[in-house]
Image (cartoon, rainbow, N blue to C red; front, side):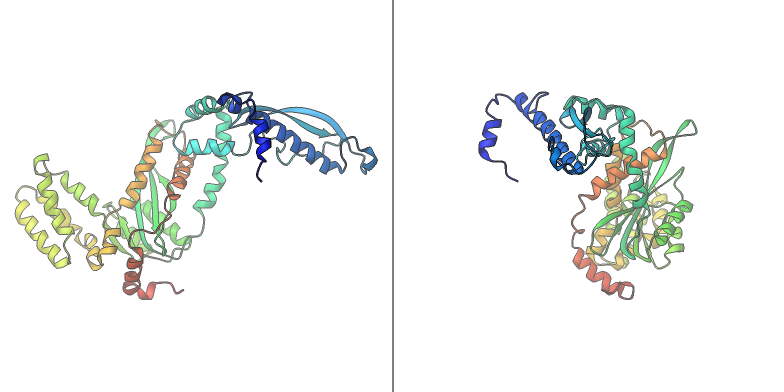
Amino acid sequence: MTIPKDLLDALMKDYKNPEDLIGETGLLKQLTKQLLERAMQAEMTEHLGYEKNATADKKTTNSRNGNYQKRIKGEFGNLDVTVPRDRDATFEPIILPKGQSRFTGFDDKIIALYARGMSTRDIQAHLEEMYGVEVSPTLISQVTRAVQEEITLWQNRPLDEVYPIVYLDAIRIKVRQDSRVINKAVYLAIGVNLDGIKEVLGIWTAETEGAKFWLQVVTELQNRGVKDIFIACVDGLKGFPEAIESVFPDTQIQLCLVHMVRHSLNYVSWKQRKAVATDLKSIYSAPTIEQAEIAMDAFSAKWDDTHPTISRSWRRNWERLTPLFSYPTDIRKAIYTTNAIESVNMSLRKVTKNRGSFPNDESMIKLLYLALQNIEKKWTMPIRNWKSALNQFTIIFGDRMPMY
């Protein structure tokens, strides 16, 4: 609906500064109040079936019974409105339902602020500063608690049958438990579906990160409908690959090369880090596995006298580090590192850094879920060169690709 220009001109006739429009007694607030009250009067007429004072058309024993005042909160601040009532107390306004003290969109504003990592105290201060509205910590908790049911549905939703790539990783977050603060492990699984779009498959928590709990995670993924994963990208946690293979025996495990290089450089002095990193790159960037093995031998010959631990570690994990050599460049770029999930972890750390610790698991999961929803909104495009990668997956895993 377009408002006539002459009406706008009449409304703006006395406008001199922003306060006249958006201030405490400004035009927008007055219009909101009058429109709400006019709408509720119209609803009352619809409810009773006759216009005010039009008793000749009255076909009910019910009638208007004055008004009462109600204060609502919104982006316009606090607003006192007059709500009509009827003698039978059966009238319930649609535009401003009984029991509702916050205008449409206000709860979304609180949830959006919470999702960005703001504490309850920060949200209180922000809403008062921006809109002149005082809200209690209890109100904020009630609004954000409403997300819990949504989380339960999301965490138990059915998943696709096939994910060509799944990234698995965990981060540590401080949570209060049994009157003490501990670093809990938060497990994350991100899948790349057949359209090349990333999606968070779930969040899980445990006191420590271990292969036994990862077994529970991948078992839950299977129970929610996942029948096959082509490649799982993981860090070097002991027993992790075996946990995945026990549930998805045909899945290839690719250890994150970035994690491997980072771990290797822990044994090297600052002066030698660049040289060692360059020689390690010659291994994992080799065009074929045969050339990677030659580069590995060359690395050992050069560095084993001073840093024998590095080559031993690489050789011990060689079977898990080299699956990428079986794939073309487009797929290699997508699986050689768990950066896809590392970047998510970094975003989650940003929204949790303002919290010294969470009072319980529920409040932690609530914030992480809301933050992940914001992150997923940006995942609107397939990963780079996905069509080419999908064609290659079809050739390599032809018998496991779902039929369309």
